[in-house]
Length: 72
Image (cartoon, rainbow, N blue to C red; front, side, top):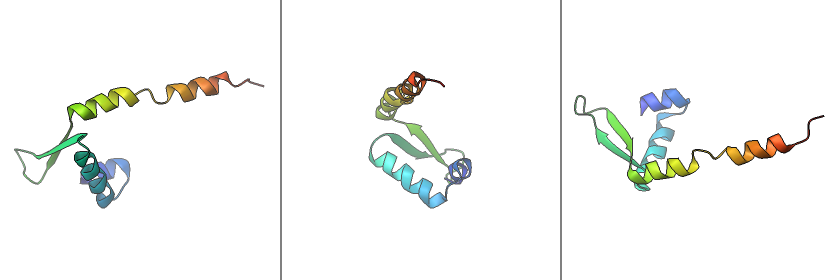
């Protein structure tokens, strides 16, 4: 969790809560690293992969609307 907290500029508690929520929702799996049991390995579940496919282009409708604004 410390790596993610540094990457996103969040506290470890915030990242831990977010990961726990994603695990509970079945979107992310968590398992210990076989090389170092202190390290947690995160991965997308099949449900998580499906969700990322559905939301990967979330910004397209917004961009289309902005591009439709008349320029002055």
